[in-house]
Image (cartoon, rainbow, N blue to C red; front, side, top):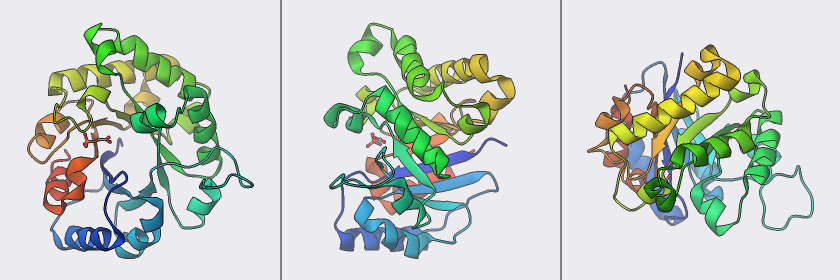
Length: 253
Ligand code: PGA
């Protein structure tokens, strides 16, 4: 069954003390996770252990990293390996966020390498894709996103692909307060699923969770998640507020 996912992306926010407070508020706020619902918290590396200690063992709740390196280990000062993450029981990692692509020059090929090392180590990537504003204005977003999928994912086997969560995040909607309309989100999610179906078959494509990201908040989550191919959200700003994020979790269909 396709999983419905509310994923928090804290990005480079909060002090340790603020992170601890937010985790405590999250635990204290009633939320409902059905059998196929997951809540994932992608926190900064220094807070992984803290988040694990607060959230670990809770049903359908996972702690995630926001990045990892493409090499197994060695002389890569400042980087974090997949082996380090698995040794801390981390099971998900965000890869290919547009901020990593833009500020750290992450290419589709590098992301393919990162995806490979994650899958070899049983870590599930939350693979982000999405177009900038000029591409949307030129109405070539399908080609743009199609190429991102092709260059980073299409070398995978069907079995491997099913370990991937996809997050469609139009760059013009990230942190701007400008959400894609639910129709725009549905249209792109359906396109992504069709592309996956063409390559891997319908059954595989139907099982992949495709999240929407870009100014998701408590007030628009239910409408976005009501769309047939929108299986939840990857949430930045609104995930820093316990009440907002729990409303988003409770909006999963
Ligand atoms: P936002 O960020 O919710 O603040 O727009 C989403 C994301 O970048 O994952």
